[in-house]
Length: 125
Image (cartoon, rainbow, N blue to C red; front, side, top):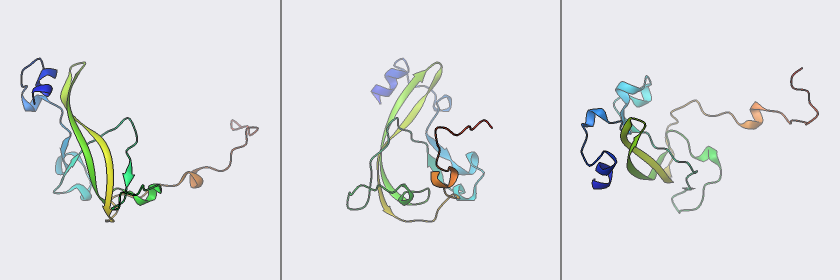
């Protein structure tokens, strides 16, 4: 707490004035999947390691999706940048524990979106 307080000039700011990573799904999302639930915004500059229950790497991105169950490592830190103050959440690694009901429509593969591109193709015409 002291490390975070130092980001705010040694004083504990009013919680209402801070940006926080914990979100209320009833207020911030117009989606039935979030009804009656809270969610957390977590970001990372580097891709997390993703493993299965045996800690074996999951290489197929389709195995991990919005709605599967997982354990995640998170780090919380204070920020005070250009007048924006708050607590942020950094995503560490992910361990998928089991499948669940998909919360989204899914993602289209790059192969579906694009065909083979030849350097001599004139894509402007």
